[in-house]
Image (cartoon, rainbow, N blue to C red):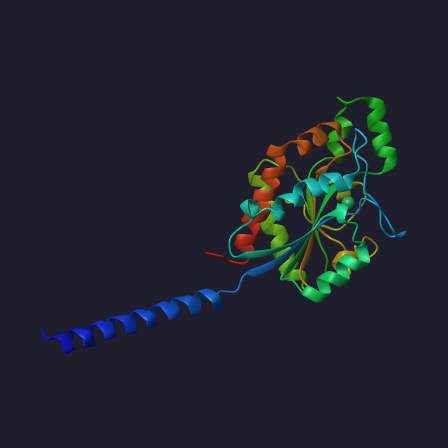
Length: 255
Ligand SMILES: [Zn+2]
């Protein structure tokens, strides 16, 4: 092979390699990340009368602290599913209910997710407290639940996430909350999965006003002494974080 032939072959190989490399780069940059906005329910310091710090746990801790303890994980890349872009709002940042929804409607995520921890009616809590920590009454107001709304512009998409998430939680041994259905008469569309359709008179501001598919997760019931303890452990919180991430991967069909 003479020198000119060798140079032609070398230039051709380099040229082809560059074309392949550029195609790979372009396809990588075109791979759009799916977007989720994860919001920690309530605020630390309420600035308006529609905001508050949430329920108070059995031992007297405000709910927003439990919500932040779960949502905080998503601020760390280690706890994020690949292929998903996370926008995170902590309750301790004190962004009010209306402002959170306004922000969501500007950035328009593919999913709006709000994290909460649950309570019950004051008279039921009082009765259980009087009966003591070992009372079976706590059982009646325990468990996780998932809330979407037919009043949201994307009820089917929202419900799809709710169902996938409930499946993950059930697989992890969490139990569904039926107190909202049996005592508060909310519309429960699936008793096995603890899924609620929040329509009037039980509507939720965020579900009604967000212009993206939206779901509210009640991770569990912190007014119960047993569940408060369970929900306070890092192991449980990581189970919930994993359940959310696994659900996001399925919801967005990320391979
Ligand atoms: Zn709440």
